[in-house]
Amino acid sequence: MQIFKALLSQLLACVAVLGLRTTFFLSISVWQTVAIQACLAALFSRGFHQPYWWLPIHLLFLPTVLLGLSWQVPAWLYLLILLLLTLLFWGTVKGDVPLFLSSSAVSQALIEIVSREQAKSFVDIGAGLATVVVPLAKARQDMAVVALERAPLPWLLATWRCRNLANVRVGRSSFWEQDLREFDVVFAFLSPLVMAKIGEKIRREMRCGCLFVSSSFPIPNSQPESVLELNDSRKTKLYCYRID
Ligand SMILES: C[S@@+](CC[C@H](N)C(=O)[O-])C[C@H]1O[C@@H](n2cnc3c(N)ncnc32)[C@H](O)[C@@H]1O
Image (cartoon, rainbow, N blue to C red; front, side, top):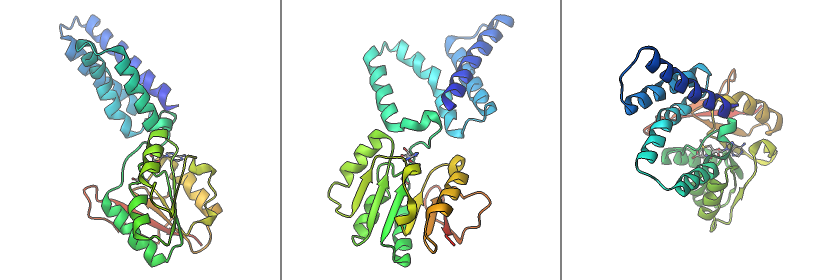
């Protein structure tokens, strides 16, 4: 599990940097020691094949702790930050996809896609803060829109943002438990790690002729019907798969 790999990376980096200091009698400052530890932790993390988004966590972890100690941050603040991060990222430590938000270019492209498809129903599996769902539901008030989000804080914010949109349902459940049969267009912005399993799920559940759109990550060994490259800062690619 990712959390054990992360802890092991941090621990090994601590042992390695302390070993280096004592073996070679390095006279380096605490901050230099912490900087070396952070780089080593990031390297160990890559060695354990952790996803790339763990790198900033490893690089910032010990320096942040040291900063907190030197500023004498009150203990309850750590607890509060931990609580907020847990509610925001929820299953991420178990290997779930973290929260990244789509650009407005993605929402705009999806509005065009659902209009061209004459879609009556749409779902965002892993809706985050409803960044995609809100503009889509406003633009297509005749379409039933479902937003599924498992992490409590994003779900709460998404529910609040959709409170006046009669055509939106925000569900606090895992998309793995949602049958995708009822949707004309399914949208996902997840992670390369889950795309093979998602590919199996859509082929098993989605109806023939319906469309699956994946932002940024293709389904391995599957030919998309089309790939749209958007003109946003990430040059997002939307991989569109027709179910046959
Ligand atoms: C990369 S974000 C995408 C957010 C939004 N769809 C967008 O495009 O802006 C992925 C989201 O999927 C959620 N997520 C991850 N696994 C999930 C699951 N099994 N069920 C529901 N949501 C999930 C995460 O909590 C995160 O908010």
